[in-house]
Length: 617
Figure 1 (cartoon, rainbow, N blue to C red):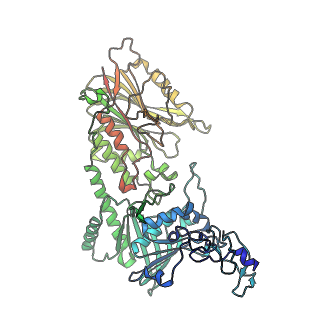
Figure 2: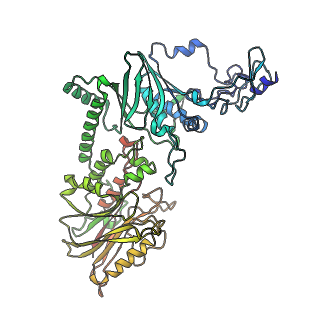
Figure 3: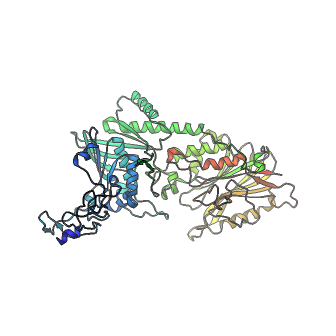
């Protein structure tokens, strides 16, 4: 039968189906490639398929992921599906487009011993059991066939639903525009959840309220709510159990359930060989999740709020007690750094904090949850305050920080009692962020401060960004310093570096003993430095073997810099400002490079810090 030949056979013994649309997570391997010679992995008998789930409660879910987004779930060669199965322990089945596209090559068919290719490109009429064609028969549209999930536990099912929901959402392109705009991102994805004694229909949402559904097995119908807390990995399951027991003791009406899910990351063994399941490149690192679920009568929202409140308190305490790890060896440092620091020396560091607006706009994993909500006020703020106070540098240059963040940071006693600050907001930048200079109260005294605006390239407004400048007196050395925190962006500003250098030249009559400026320059100074300035022998030195930066500060590039110059306008230089790498400066750089497991293994910002120590000699 010619039409049967076009469609391809259903596969030989051990071979997979002739036109399986997508390879689901439990069909990794050689399905459909046996060509009827028995090399494929067969489905096995019905008894063997059911054996796996004997004596276990099976939980299932059906999620209506739009067909244009299902390729994100499958990944190259089914890699993403395999990854989801590995970290969640659930089986995920992704249907194709209804015409068999995307399937593997089928084996020899029963009706055609020469075997059909089964490559999924056939669109011939369907064939009935009697060999007659049915022109009216057509495969169902892809949107009517949901993604199916099967798991042995509720926690595994919820974890798989969480991963499917967030992986199937299109990411934002580098220019900030959505690649594909669909309503399912904002309105949720329709789903059906089936667990023992309960069937619920509702929506999966990209929010703290993860699942909102209606329990159709009860009369009257009850609403089922599932909430999710990310980044709880610094606690263990016993800690969560204690928090839940405390809340239930306080309010006996809170009877909602909870599950603490830690991703499965261990390797698998196959035929005495260990094979590691690798995370697909475009998928962000998994994080520990805490699910709280129940009907409205069980008050899951109250339990969720109480747990979130207590977790944030514990995280803040954890950050406050965390101290920087100082280098244990000075063998790699210059001789000056290994020596005891002179009390007249001072250390300056620069750090781009990654503003929440840009973290959400560009889906920066360092600054967002999987829901693409900012994690600044809940996690990063407290960790950054702890980093700044524990490293205890004399001066900090901070970029991408707004007035609200400065206010929140200085509400903390740790910073407020030791540091003073000036902050200027960029005139026309979208996020209304700016630059700030922090200095120790006992060491420096502010003489004056001002903003240096940078002209905008767009004609509709005059200025776009700015630099913050502080003229300070060093109370230890009685030297006057000009400090400037900058954030250059040549794409939208007209020659910002030249503007800053012209300002410094205009202050020549004030005769500062030293000039130090730095920040996010968005530029690699490979050979030509700003005229009249030097750069320290910093912690971010080049590797002599391959020429790469030992501590690249952003996307494998060194774009965060500190520059300095001695006296400005003095006819005779009685003192010279010099720099070196100290234990303090190196500890700060290493602290900004530390990855937090509870945040999925990401650093606190998409930039690393830079620091150096100065001394007058």
